[in-house]
Amino acid sequence: MNAIWKRIMGCFRAHEIWTLKQAIRLPVLSPILFLGLWVWAVPLVLILGSLSLLMIGSNAKLAMISFAPTLLIAVAAFVIVGPWFLGWVTTCGALMSGHPRRATQRLETLMERGPANV
Image (cartoon, rainbow, N blue to C red; front, side, top):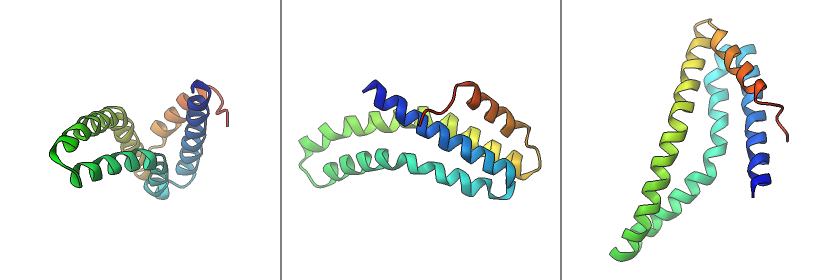
């Protein structure tokens, strides 16, 4: 399981590095490139969607049982993804206003974490 997680994070890091390089090269397209990173949220949306459908189409007892994991996953996703999302929004805003320093710092930080083992 650990090897799979490392591979997934390596692919995500490679995608984020590519997105940053392209956003630095074409600052006007940085919000569109940022939207491309949301492909990684598809599994989470599918899980939350299926749990939500379970709550809608079932009796009250099953709905309450499926509510707890849905709430925990949603709060955890918000806490983990929130700072990352706001960092990207400010980076895109800085790039579009002609200040690439934040994006280059972010790119250097990602590169220091090691090569993306894809």
